Length: 266
Image (cartoon, rainbow, N blue to C red; front, side, top):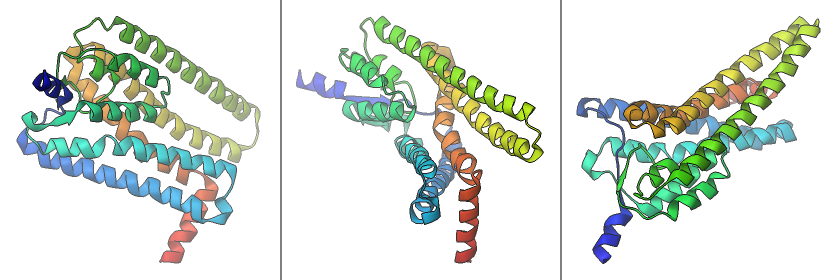
């Protein structure tokens, strides 16, 4: 019984299917991406925290985004890079570690109610020990069970559809109002600034939305596992890398402060 319990508590992470010749190039690429994300997001937090002229509610709100990006990337990339350099048969993780990682993955995705979903998952018995993903998430966890998981699937799909609908609706309404103001306004400078800012925001949002929707729905289709893995990794590295540029340097006050700070250091 003890041996069975121990076997069920140790999971094998499938990870990325990479040929040995590509392991180091992929590792170096992900390492550079991780360093860039860390430096840019931490730099933005330090800049806002230390410069008194940026101590305004709007700029403090910007600190929440890089903190979320740092957490979301750190919970995924270091472990993923470590697994890339390991043999497929050596990519082990305990069940507790997997649950903790899945929790923070969904917190990064701003899915607070996924705590309930993970609660529905960990109640299930486990008959498998392989995580069919580069990292742990709720779907990977309930796939370990041989029980009927229709409740988990239905709850996940319904909740995802509701969140995506509300998200798309709010974005559509917000940018619709911005477009209306731009059309009725005769201020070309203001319109140009609004279009420039909105276009970059929409680009990041589309990348996040498509990547998130892809890996959530493709979990239900095993034949597209590699596409799902790519989408899940894109969701955790592309937005965190673009957010400091889009929401940081696109903001006039932050951009000017950064330039002054850089020139002062020079």
